[in-house]
Image 1 (spheres, one colour):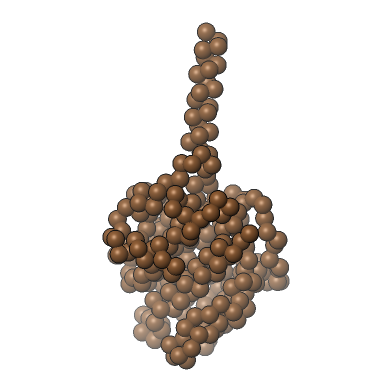
Image 2: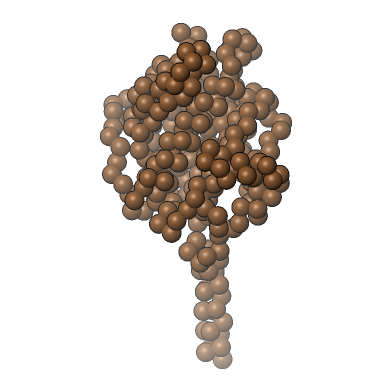
Amino acid sequence: MLSTRRHFLIGILLMGIKALSPACGQERSFDALFPFLNAADKATVFSSGGLIISIEGQDGLRLGPASALGSAVVQPVLAQHPGFLVEALLVIPQTETKGFVQVYNALSKIRNLKGRLYHSATRDKDIPLFEDATRITGVKKTSLLPDPPDAHAVPLSETIYIRLKDVNFGNSYYRADLTRNQQSLQYTLANVKTISYLFIPVMKEGKFIAHLYFEPLAEGIVLYSIAGADVSDFVASQVDIPSAIRKRLEVIIGWVVEGITQAP
């Protein structure tokens, strides 16, 4: 009797461990997580640049994960009621040595954002979007911090503060929040001070937010990202906000993808 009960409890425990463990070969497929893409969009997602879409308002999202997971992933951005959104989706080819540790280490290298290029339509050439990029101690006390050495494990959560010297907006300040569970790693970046252009406020505190979702799938590491901004009608009439969001999201995505793919 006791032996039968013991075997039953051990069986239940092993089933629970198998369900929770990411190392059991139970990764979802891309189609299971993103079932609504047409063939052309899916082909673009698996290309080197991935798929990126600009949206005005909060209607028309089409790249997010399915069902309740999709709602949870986009909610940090939609909760700020942005007037403009940009979605991006791509699959990073994965080898057995690439996983959450490589993603985390790539996200930790803030200084590697410095000097990354974007194409300026007004200047008709590629120029650095962020002239400087560094960790800081906080919003009020902004002493500079070095990037940490590569980690061998990923924390369940972490918050850091970042200062970016933006080519258009000057010094801008952000809070980055990372959370991890068995299935995904998520990273949220939001401005913690007003972003201005030539002393004109463009985005008030918390009105720019970007959320990045990483999950190892059978086909590779998927990166879904959504970024949004809420600005006044006057600013929207003077600045191409969707283009501004898109350029910054593209640079951020390029930074983290390069960090992952070049990791040892």
